Length: 208
Image (cartoon, rainbow, N blue to C red; front, side, top):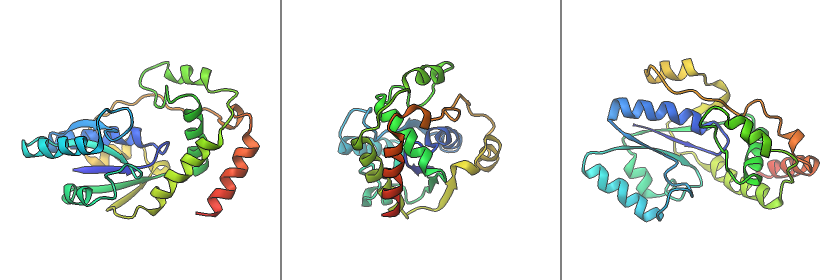
């Protein structure tokens, strides 16, 4: 299988659609997406036990991981996916990823990814006159450091270099549901304390 390891606001939800399709076609895997995220109930141990148990029964699952997810840097992860291809999804524009993360943080992650037509407009209405908290910025950089340090992968893909056609050809799949994105949103115009945010980003980036 292919296992995607990435970082929030780096195109992982979009790319995971293609990975899921590949894993389903080739391994009959079911989609669990962000299984180790906060929105999925259960402890890390319960989730790991579920994956172990289901594999013994012959069922594989396609899971998207972030580098700060607890299982990623464990022996279990290395053993469990020893026969899989680990892809590290990177993004060149770290500043926009940072701003996108802050905007989602301050709006409660209600529209973290557009799932249907109209979600972009809904998010655009709440994503305005934001004040970026230091807590949001600190959290992004704490988590980003785990991404920088992660080196246990077979291939690196870069979000800006990927297209629908390229992914379909590379993974030999024919169709993936394509939806709207937040690429048209200018986050700088929507954050009131943008000068402080820029300064914080520049200072912290230099220390990594």
